[in-house]
Each structure stands twice: as structure tokens, then as C-alpha cells.
Image 1: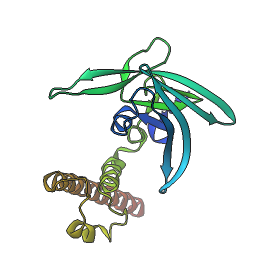
Image 2: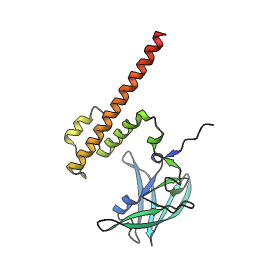
Image 3: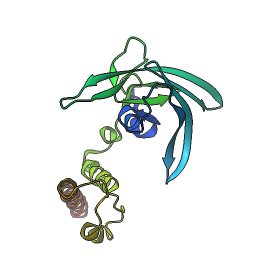
Image 4: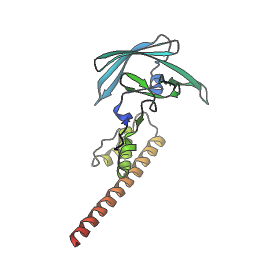
Length: 200
């Protein structure tokens, strides 16, 4: 029997407690609209309120209205302040989670939604290239490899210091080398098969 592949986190809308905390969402009495962007435009949105340690979400999915209450808790940080977490509302879960994912009108943690990361489902030879592309997105670089060398010389994200930026560039270059090596190995293996087929 063929095993059914799991859904991926990349296919789901999510809420991130860290992002919401930076936006001052977790202030009692706060309300507003939270949106998700695609191609720099708002693609989906929902209303929210934060009252007495609970995030109240209102949204429409697939023509149905939903109103959810999600508990929020905190843990102390090493150097003061505290970190916010969602309490997963999944059945028999209740675990802390930084992210909750939307599936069938419910926000739950990745385990409750039975989600994998896309990279877990792809062919191993593509892992380095996917990681390389992710680093380019984080750096704000174009995915076009011909333009990347130009961006390396002149472009640094405004919210990154020089040391952090260089570490990200170094990681990108490592993934790029691995991706190129995997591509060469695949090409060589393919040519070997062609040669053996011709010899027969």
C-alpha cells in the first residue's frame, strides 16, 4: 500500500507568537487585523483580539466563519523580559508552540496537524539547493543565480549587522557549493548510465 504523504508547513497559513509579540499584539485589550502576504500583497487576513491571556481569532475559510480562542503563556528569558508561546488547542495536546498552523478551520501545532517540512519530502539531492534558495530569500537576494554576485557586493539587509550578514552569506555559499556538487554528481551518474546503455 502506498503511504499517503503528509501536508507541509509551507502549504499552510500560520501564526507566530514571536512575530505577534514584536507587533505588540499581546497587550490586553488590543484588537486589529492580521494579514498574510503573497508577492508583496495581502492574500488572506483575520481579525484578532487579545484579552486576559487569550488570543481570539475571527476569520472565514472555505466559506465558513470561524472564531477561535487560543491560550497564550510566557516563559522568562535569560536576560530579562519574557517570551510568548501559544498553547496548542489540539485534543490532548496543550503544549507550548511558537507557531500554529491553519488546517480545516483550526490553528494547531505542527504535530497535531501532522505536517512535515517540504524539505523532508523532497529528493535528497535537492536539499542543498532548497536551503540555498531559502538563504537567498532571507537575504533579500533574487533567485536568479546570474544576479546574485552583484547583490553580494552591494546589498546588505537593513536589519542585519555586518557580522550577521556575512554569516548568512557564508551559509548561502556553503549550500551553493553542495548544490553544485550534487548537480555535477547527478550529471556524471546520468552520463555513465547513457554510456553503459550505448555499450550494450
